[in-house]
Amino acid sequence: MTEPRWLNADERRAWLALLSINTLLPAALDTQLQAAGKLSLFDYNVLAMLSEADGRFLPMSELAARTSASLSRLSHVVTKLQRRGWVEREAHPGDARVTVAHLTDAGMDTIVSLAPGHVDAVRALMLDAMTDDDVADLARIGEKIVARLDDDHWILRER
Amino acid sequence: MTEPRWLNADERRAWLALLSINTLLPAALDTQLQAAGKLSLFDYNVLAMLSEADGRFLPMSELAARTSASLSRLSHVVTKLQRRGWVEREAHPGDARVTVAHLTDAGMDTIVSLAPGHVDAVRALMLDAMTDDDVADLARIGEKIVARLDDDHWILRER
DNA sequence: TGGTTTTAGTTGAAGCTTCAAGTAAGTGAA
DNA sequence: TTCACTTACTTGAAGCTTCAACTAAAACCA
Picture (cartoon, rainbow over the protein chains, first blue to last red):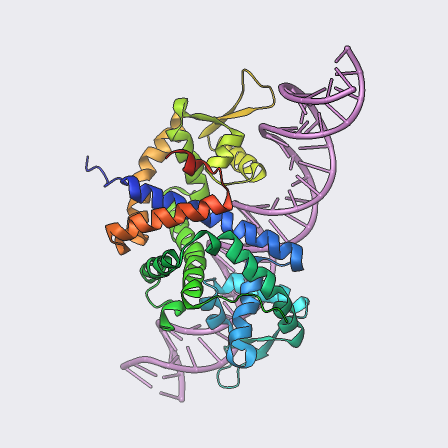
């Protein structure tokens, strides 16, 4: 039997830590956002990505890429955000297949009011635990992993 | 106006990378495990934690801690794993409030057969993208973040 | 041109997670 | 001892995510 190469001590530590962060961090941020505005971290990110886009709109596919989500998940969530008056769906002028998601003024007001508390939470829950060098290391290593998972992920396009 | 301290370039890179890893990595591992044995990453971890425990059993609370899950989530999942014959619930001799989750032989066989493919996937999806130094850095930084999120998390007890 | 394939997105159902409420047993204080 | 509090866990419902199937338009190509 060809034994698989098992994880060594550091590999196991890195993997278990990432796995734990993975459940704890979104849960903590969800709790904060749920209390502040009855929305999830994913909802917040959809609004945030739209707020940073030119004209505050993006095609569904591009928005899905920027939130690392499936089109199906995004479609359901946009429907929900639309019912809350934060997002609208519009036709794309050049390509009739495309749906454009557009952040409304109410949606913009929502993120603007939520952003400070959210950023504070991100600091309190992770960044404050780290030195500047740690942050730089995590950025570098994190981007390597993202590149491995999806070699043309949008966060790699920015640099 | 008291502007919240915004994220600087590295902080933003680190945060966005972690957020992306957070959705992409579990999704990729879920896909692999779903194909190999019709179970989720969380299911796998429950079985894995039990398989590593003395006697292959743990109280629900302890198992919840080791999988970073809520007791409610775990309870639902153990019910499902129980229906598949991989786990059993037993009474705790000393404390009648406690339910002990016990990995069955069938459950053990399942992880043993699944583990090599899963470890390969973890390597292919993240570890192979990193140098040994990267792995050590990620372990160190990851544990700092875990400590911030939950200062007596079980992965910190091991060291 | 017409037919096939690909791209973009939506939908409903099934399964998973969270939330709130509830049960039962152990702990602690007077 | 008794009563209040806490701990350990379960449950059902509501909401979220995934999956598979579907529609429609654009691109390809022969």
